[in-house]
Length: 235
Image 1 (spheres, rainbow, N blue to C red):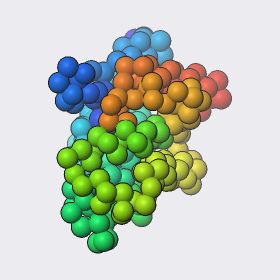
Image 2: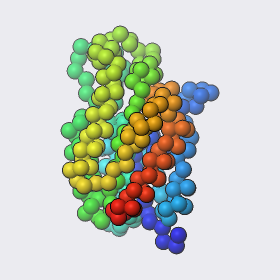
Image 3: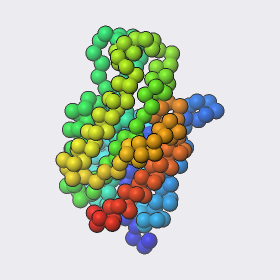
């Protein structure tokens, strides 16, 4: 424990620990991901720079800013992106369902930017670690984010509520593809949630942010990743 390995976390509200407060149904930070337990168990020092609403392009800017000192300030950076990148402006869709609409970060830009970040970190001698996206509940998502909007118009554009799930899944699969292409370590949060089999019990009312039980699942996924990686001698 004298010289813990330094890990920094960059991502969005998932690893920030954002949940929905059941009293007022508003977002707030209630992070039950057991960072302290992970630090003690595996002799790590973890700093979390995740931000609510962060996309891959904003994350790139934050990481570049951290690197401006030209010092290797940590051993590895864990990155969790895609959830906000794949999202749409649902109000605009509801108002103009016949128009073309694009996600916050198009998939090609998402992939290109992730590649740039990984290349930059490797050049600095910092190990990149990526995470897949936990699955969402499409129907809860639709009801939450389209509340007060013309749902019929949104559904006209989507064609099916399940399109939301498949679209988000595509970004997670892209993360897996990038990890394979760049030989980057990958924490499979999505796989852990799917293996549990009870997705609704792990998510907040909006169908996308993990609740306390979901955050415990994230903790276990990271613990399993560390143990497996060390057993294989890759970290």
